[in-house]
Length: 100
Image (cartoon, rainbow, N blue to C red; front, side):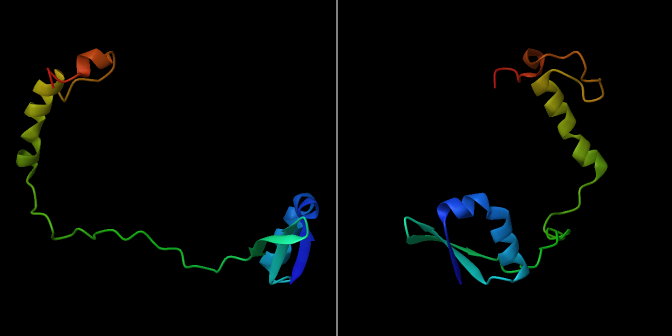
């Protein structure tokens, strides 16, 4: 266990971190005015969690395309645009829902 003062830690932080990461030092104590203030230790290698797809599989009923497209008319009336028009040239004011 090595103890360094704040100025030395500030000047040589990269070296201190490298020493802890590679295992040369198990931990390094950084002191302020001679009193221990911080302990520098290496992080435990934690496994990286992989993204798991399909967690919601079977929780929702399958939706047909026609049923899914039925909501388009509600969006068109709310936002005063058709879903198949290009969105270029519309201002925020044109897209605001009617009184909602």
